[in-house]
Length: 211
Length: 282
Image (cartoon, rainbow over all chains, first blue to last red; front, side, top):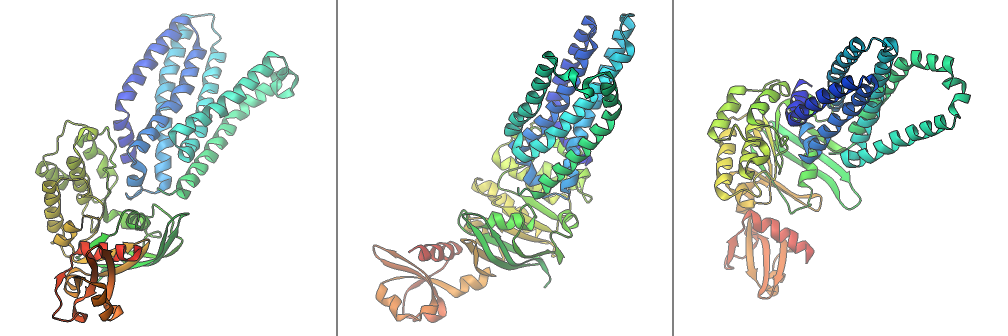
């Protein structure tokens, strides 16, 4: 798997540099605005950008056909894409945590617990998005997967926001204070379950496909 | 002689094409030319060997082992070159050097460096900027740098100029000097195969038409250019393919079964392929 990751990082070198600059500028901006939630959004966004690019490049150079003629199992190949996503996520998380910490230092009135919770929730969202993204990429290819990803993320989010705006959500026990607390406590397990299911689905897709 | 590759009754169906009970054997230490027109099933067969596609039926043994059950072990000992160079476009030689040792247990960095020098591959350019010849040389350098004992070449020389093709053929002849090594070389450039192949396997519309030693094939068949009446005088089993043209007929015939007084030309590999394929169409 190390070889696959080396290949991905070398292939994405230019994009990683640009992403690094973007992360630093964006974090700086979020710090200046004292808006820690902005940093969390960046985490979600970037965790899917690089795996999508990686798979787009693989498709363009017909890498799958070659990769599966090497002594690499399809499971290892799939795992390498998740690891790539996690490594990107980890790097963004470190920058986000530093940004959040700086904001808390600068703004004595900020609610530290809430801001760390927001960052944690964003991390979970990132893992969920990555878990959604990779099977779609393997099943449909980079071009079509982007469309599916938009449909599967934007549609439910818009529906939830609309329901919240109309005050419908607050009527459900799950979205009242106790329900939200329970949701927060159970979310790591829920996220882990989604991740594991996603990995199994991706391996299944990759094993079933012909290249 | 041990078999490096044995394919028995391989079947694979698509909506518009099928591999139909494909069987042949590549003995150890030999080069087998795998010929056939575009879409005949050469690449599909190679993909089945590499388990890139699922077979419907049949058995594929590489080094005596099943290509699915012992897939990774077998792939450590196979070098593959496809018609296009599939290494990622944005990599440089240095990065390939870093990546490959983690992909092959037997990666030989010194061997790869020697091929890079020999082929004068540019270290600073990304793969995307290589010429087609350079890309194929790089693909072959990678395929030969982990002590592979079976080389699978799928149209690896098509689109290359004659000088580069000749260089690559010399390299393959060097590789085959080791009696443990074997090559399955799919191509429709029959001239290349005539130069280096020991065996020729011809696939047409998904079925194997022959798989024999090249010298035996060339000894056995002639091309008869004559008339329909001449053809009618021959034992039908002696005629393997006929093409009608405005001057008469061109037929692939068994040399021993043709009257000695008739004028025939020795058949080339291309004649074998074209006359059998065209003959069927007509």
